[in-house]
Image (cartoon, rainbow, N blue to C red):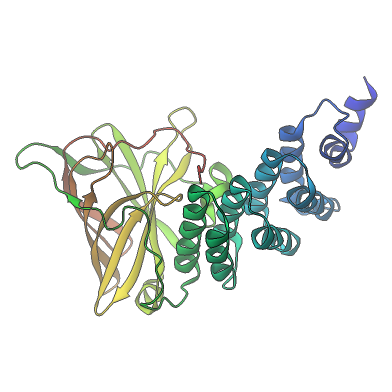
Length: 331
């Protein structure tokens, strides 16, 4: 066994550090970050070391792509050292790729103060796509944490105000309930976005639209949705190769009068549906219409979750054009 292989097997954190800091091993940056994330995410004596190496990587590594990978990884790890590093980079860097990755991470692990930080980063960066990513992250953070949202704050998502796209009368695919095909385990299958789904979200049911299947998680903490912005639940896609679930859409709500404003958005801010809803007893009802975006199909859906059970009806012109396999954030 070579010295490198022996070191990688017996001291994986040290081998990963060598790969990132000295670039003299055969592990490569991607493999090194995977090792560090695995160690940092589990209780153990080297967990803090792994977090520290990832934190140094996003602030000091000369290759922006490696810094991007490290930033996204810290979004799944969390912890104080990770937050300090992410905030430092968000406050200082103008590299659009890195800004996007840091924004993605802060939307999942950031705190209340990070909303202003993300909006400042959006104004500072010169790359429009990165600015949009930071604005999207600020909006997701607002819902995840239930932050106050004054009328003067523009947190509109891209395409949220696009024209509504209703299905053609008499022609379409019915949206219908189905048995739950798989049990979701987002912490394992989709750690990048699992933190955006409330811990109080429970499995409510599943439905199909043509050949595409969706698993529905609904937030059982209805009182929080009445108090301010929140995440009412998530629609999960199913990876056709592994049968694992991933976050396809988040159900973002905020109270306006006695109603709820409802937006169905991907985690990277692509709005698919808009509409309204209301809290009814021990459940929630929503009515949603597709928005006009490239490749979108006209659709209308009425859904309710009462006592933890999903009911819905709706019609779509065609199966929704969302990638079937697990999407990686493209902030």
